[in-house]
Amino acid sequence: MIVRKQLSIALATAALATGLVTAAAPASAKPARLAAAECGVRSDGKLWCGNRVGAKGYEHRSYGSAVRGPLNTSFSWFACWGPGDQHGGGNNVWYWTQLDNGQWGNVPAVDVHTSVDPAPGLRQC
Image 1: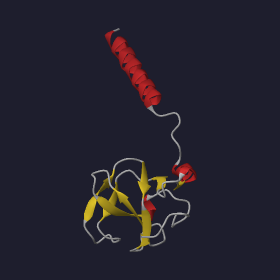
Image 2: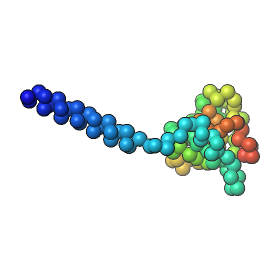
Image 3: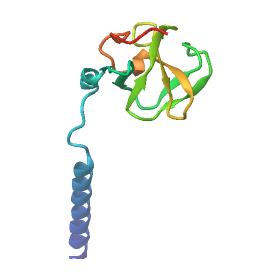
């Protein structure tokens, strides 16, 4: 009887934990490909776009340059773009932005959820 009661409690606990995890998950989470649809240059001249959380901003448009800081948020603005090192996105476009630590840095386009690079309407720098 004690074993059955312990098993029942364990199963109830597992079911409750699973329900809480499922309830806590965002119901409206969007795939990354939809983020590109929300990406564009606004009237302020900046590109506002989704990005990879944890993306690094570099001093120059090169992975060999110093890391200035991260993008910890999933949606950021970018002031302009310029050519640099080739990256995993299949091009050499890098975006210039103020990083989440207040420093300015270059982010490779592979980490910005644009549909095409450079983003149409964004000035080159």
